[in-house]
Length: 52
Image (cartoon, rainbow, N blue to C red; front, side):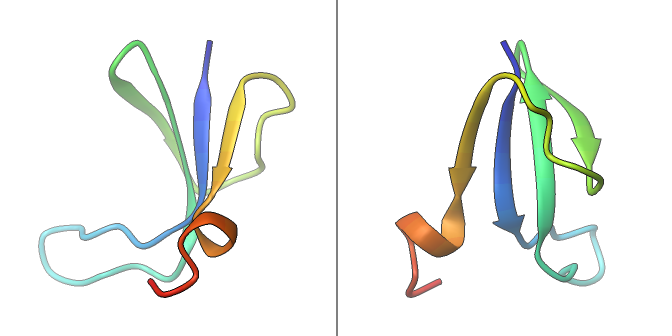
């Protein structure tokens, strides 16, 4: 089952990205950015961690 985290800031080795979506499955990142999949778990960092 895939898991997606919304509103993630990713460090690419040089800088932080704007808030984006990161999806992963079986311990591997499967997508950065793009639409949120309709199946699987979804976590929104703005909702669960507003101080970040």
